[in-house]
Image (tube, rainbow, N blue to C red; front, side):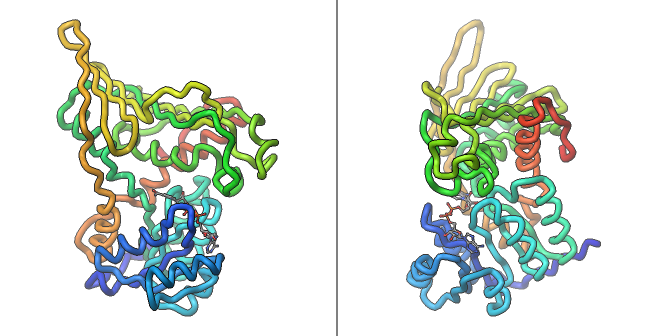
Length: 350
Ligand SMILES: NC(=O)c1ccc[n+]([C@@H]2O[C@H](COP(=O)([O-])OP(=O)(O)OC[C@H]3O[C@@H](n4cnc5c(N)ncnc54)[C@H](O)[C@@H]3O)[C@@H](O)[C@H]2O)c1
């Protein structure tokens, strides 16, 4: 049963809390500051590591601090909870918060499996609350520029291929991102961003996914041993309109090519080296190759929480819906299963 979402009359009625205030990128501070900038009010932080709660208290004097989500739910008046914890905790923590009737923003990836995403979406519908994923990079310079050049200016003709690649020759780190169980695998960190960029560019249904993985070089040399992420993972996605997309994330590339994302169309290609800085457009005109180096449009990541605020106060539709954020997870889930089965698998969610 789907319950309708009750909205707030003002952003200041939205009392926000974060779960996870980790030190790797200080993401808790970033989230709370972005929410505060939109007029929402930070009231609580839950974090297993007591020393990080001390940091949160210094960053936000007077904020409520809790050791667990359970304590935060019981003892604070938080009504929007953002999860900034390792990937395998997103589904269990998210379900708990949603079942307690709180709106939830989950850091990417929404979850590790399609089934976990389905359960979270069903819980949000049952409780009548918002569920969204922090796809801040939806508004990076890279996709904003790609959409402008490809869809508005139509500079490369019809897009039929996107190649995404990242990596170098390096031993995985000793942090949780190198554990397959905790992270979901090598494709689940930057791969989610690259897929989310690409799904904005290719406007078509996904029909099937093939996955490939190389394993065993780094596993024994890593603290996670048999649970280390793959040395290299690859997903190849087929779309209904004939386009395809490949995503490769690797720790075994001895000679990496520059360019994290390359879009190829019938009249040219555009390569982006990184999410913010520039692009290279190559077109064939009158039998000649014309290369243009350009600047990307400015990144506007702050639009993520502005949209969430506008949605919760009835002023806008939600851009990053849970169904949208399930799309990259479904692709990754199928890629992992396909690599094990050595065959392409059909998509359930297109
Ligand atoms: N969108 C982005 O640009 C971006 C950037 C960095 C990280 N991330 C995402 O943010 C999430 C966290 O990554 P990070 O780099 O901040 O990791 P981190 O290791 O720095 O922080 C995670 C924190 O969560 C805490 N934690 C774990 N389980 C918990 C629980 N059950 N209750 C309370 N606290 C708990 C840990 O103690 C740790 O301090 C991941 O999903 C990651 O992919 C997104």
